[in-house]
Length: 602
Image 1 (spheres, helix red, strand yellow):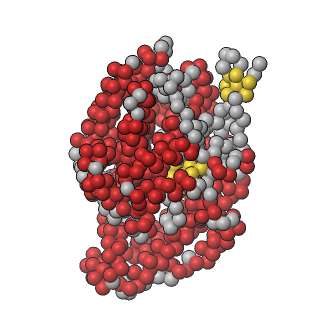
Image 2: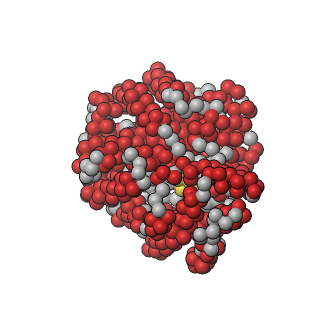
């Protein structure tokens, strides 16, 4: 007899309390459309300054303030469309609105491109004189400094404006990837030997790969990669277009390579970048091979397949937790961060900042979107697993960061480099782990929490570092003129996986398709920054444990700094020096110590 486990729900079928409340952005879709039209008309409020930024300090300040105010409105419009589409990419209205928003954004970017170009026509002396004449311009000091650093890589003002006008087209590879993944890609259900049917979606695969039943894991994997394989050439062409776009832009802007261009944007040196990749790939691999062999032994597997890497090591101990219970646990764990931070967490958990539903068309994974002047929105899929609690704490870390930065800084100074972005989120996970361990003397619970911590390190130090290494290889090949195809992507991916896992994991062709799972390849050099953030939070969490309030105060100051400092300087505010490999090595050694304890517990 065939038994259906769970029907995949349409967005209209999920409970309202499991969804985020978009009314804080716009009360209705009609209000959103009205603002969309109003913005099109109000572009003149910024465009009227074109050709005039050299007139006076006051004119420059008025222009920048107008740009900030206008940008806040645009971000709200863009965020609303993006969140609707992330919640249900199959909805035709959401798709159409997303396209309208993207078109508007390109128009706005083109209309404001003159600002950076005209500022760069001013001498550094003139800018400094303007700052002395208008107190308000001091808030834009880093903006000016960052712009001056790009001077050698700027194109003619007219060219910059044209490129900005093509923004929607340049973003097309990412849009096509996301649209296809959420709207077109259909996965076949799979059946276990007892006749039970398991419906499969892009989102639900993440649950199946952590299933205690080896048959479920491996059959889910077979069905999942079978569908991925059908799309690999189209997705490779889409990614190749993204990479080629970056190669061309890097050459136009006179950078030595795509990597140089993308790191310049992050304000990260090549040494910092290569340190992160090389140190973790080299020093973490032996620990993770031990981890894979431990799984094979404890679970009694004939071999450790790629599909077994996320199998639970203690499958009979998988405590479930409701969202309400999880909310209390997270608030208790983060209480050490003080009332201001805890208050933000409480608002997010109680006021529907979080979208928990599992529905057809919902984007996979989890993220936090933080529109300036409103509040953050978190997307995830809740399945009553304790692992969900760590995801929730992680995304709330992003939320707390941007609420604090938004309260302390203007919109121009809110966002730090991506190199720091994942530090606040992983800090929350570290504090959650330490809190649970401190509250329980149950040896099995301790082991379970260690496994959750390893899940975080696996995500940031394994999954994303391997993604980062694939990016490093692909950009290098593309810079040399090598066409990026599905064969190249799969071949390179299998090679780096083989070098990392050695003989501890049996890899099949499906493992080579993992580049199709993540959207990060369309976001510049994003993947490796996950490890940088976790490196910093590992060090800072240790200081909080040892020092208490002084370390907390330093961390909160780093969060409030927003984008006013370069990433190295922000981390130094928290007393973490990323100019050396010491914090990276210590974080990797910490992972090794967790695996040591696990080995001794079985």
